[in-house]
Length: 502
Image (cartoon, rainbow, N blue to C red; front, side, top):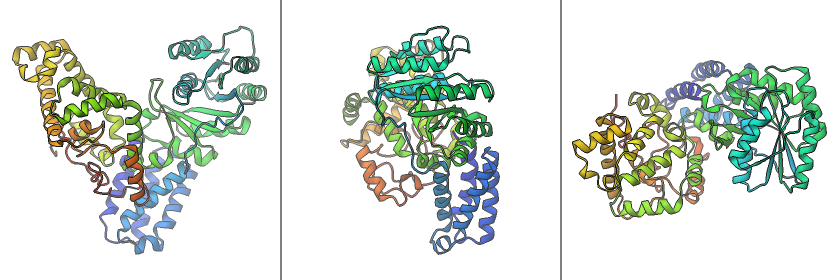
């Protein structure tokens, strides 16, 4: 997400941070480069003009001139302006209305409306503990209603029974009636789309809105469409009246122009982002955190939240106790790798770690990607229980059998065993200190004492000027995080090849 823009803006601003003083000519040169980077990221021209003018106005003012580190002050100004452009305060789905709350999903065909409807239903059911009914109003696309029914069955979420011959507004009214009679908290209305904007679709959407009177009207837009997504949002808002936007396929968009433009152009908040194909790949949109990711400052708060959501606390405590005693075996290591995979894999975690984005080329050169996790887990899965508990018994013949079972070469088995030794040594060095469930991963990746708890994060946020995402160096009293505000991290010693500088 935002990889291209992040790389370009990061390179531009890195050149500033080492400067002792900045002239107006320096600022003008930087603004030209930022303008070019934003346009190449497919950000709307009006948004680019407004963005660069506001940044320049602040950058040539007295604040930067009097600053001890003018380069870092410009970085902060750019960061703050990114947050303002993305919407300042993040907004979530508003459920403050009498039940059943109607939420209407609109958008073009192929934007991911039906899948996003199912993702939102899963989120509302599991996280918010709401009783949700899904209804497909798409009577045109073949098997569209059956698709939502199948998704509902897979997620154990109720869908409105299909009745042939009804118009979309009639289906919407029937869904709300069923919602009242069935005691549902929320009714999700998945409307039909077209391949392009047309009058018939707009009239139909307006008719559904008039019949259902939804509390939320969410536009589902494909972020890969760039400027077209902005025009789409403007058109739907004028005819139907949007309350928010859901951007899909964010994980495949290296530019990010749609996200930067849509809020500024339409004035409507981006409430959710789709970050993958799985039904749990839907996240709240936090402007400050996204701005931090764009500038390579990371997103430590989201990382901790993701850890809390995906890590079994009891299981982590048992593993932590084994680590404390120096008994870290391959079964424990597989659990750590599985946790990383559940939290978004290596690429997802690295995008949230400050400074890691600038090591992207080094990471790529070392061949470290999400496939590495799957290969390593496959190797461990090919071992017997005894081999996982006691890796020292793994000699040549056993390694050959394990490699064949995993469909890999013996070299991969040796790499895994080396990584395990590195991790085990680090666990022993940790002694009796309890660091939390991410300690093993953090230690193996050369990050020191592991991730803090959410309570520590709040305390930490209060001590960092401008907040966690402002890129300031983090206080030393938080073990393992003191170096995260710097441009680079220590070598990733746990993964072969990443500890060496090319």
